[in-house]
Image (cartoon, rainbow, N blue to C red; front, side):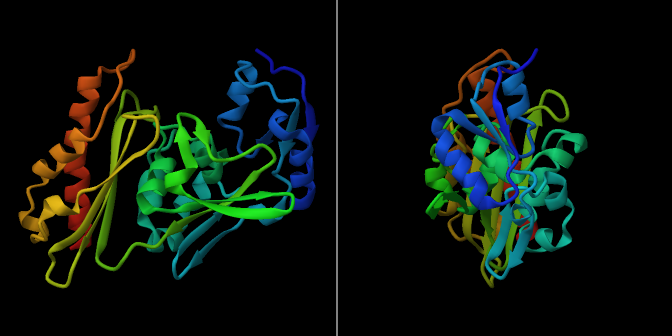
Length: 287
């Protein structure tokens, strides 16, 4: 299997890349890690006229840990982010999620921002961005805009990225003090996309009562499904919250579809089981 013919560009600075993308418009594609794009090209599910390889643009590679969170550049690899103790200290959910992404060989090449742009509703990183209420920075010739996660994912494999734009970074906000997080999922085989997954963040106050609880579900809708379930916790101590009841509230908001791998009923059942597990673990980390 071979891709359709295309013109290949390997710019060495951001300005040049944006100029090529502006000229290519909807006929251009960006190559960063290539773990999703290359198979699509080989199967001819994508046939761009121009392929813009951004791997030589050094300014897109770093990540930065700041007091308000983590900003990850377009060329930061999954494995780099996963192994960074600085990032894990500020945003542990990233490491928790990245350990579930495919296999180490894939994570050595794949990029965090590339996964966000691919916008697979069964992928872990879009869910993390949605749960943390992060944002993606998009650049084009003549301007830059930051798109909140709630507006970035528009459908399965669809995002707010427009022709001529390049996703240059993503921001994952720092969680409040006394906040725990967890990411759990079920897959048919290790490294496969999840049949269903749930990530949770739980915040407790000075009396160790739950002040906020949020979850995100993957694999059960066209985009990551987020839910604020704080009201179901009734500001009770984390150890006395009926997490099973909270999980049922999450289940009620899901509308999964059946496919060759699982029925809709089974996916909804998984959401309930995983929500209890994720919320309980996140609460334990918070306390």
